[in-house]
Length: 213
Image (tube, rainbow, N blue to C red):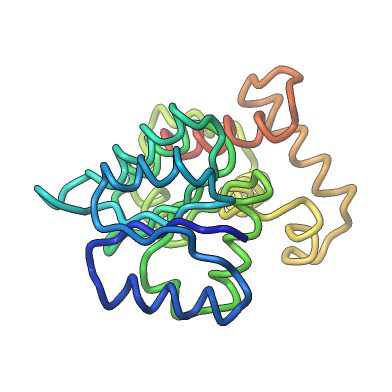
């Protein structure tokens, strides 16, 4: 894969470069601020970009805003956002830009196999959401939860969808058949009032409903 890295922390940036190049990937640009990220994406059209949420000058949401801008200029360019803390609104804003995005805590980088797998799924147009974000979403559920009609199993399936898993991977995790998962997914789409559409797009919209619940 051809990859752009945007992180103002030099040690993390250099660590990512070494990790990815050792795995046979090409880092086409490594930058430290949002403007440079946007320029790198426009110039190199990478397979995926890895972006820190907080970058100069204010260290708030520059990375996220730059990622959204990059996707506006280069539609559907895959983006993986890394954050030190769980900030659900950032994940919501990023997912609103469509498929091929991910939001992970920086701690997940240490689980190298899972991190690299997340990059592959995002590059393929999938959506990957950190499990810790899922945990916090459940903790803040409201009485007007749009997911209130989902069964416990359907919520479980939707949570795994939010983590970026395919139907086959969900079936393997839950120890059920692919057909059973497909039925749950159809029920989720119906209960969330998501009409027939491109399958990947409907999955993203279902995850957005999950985030906003």
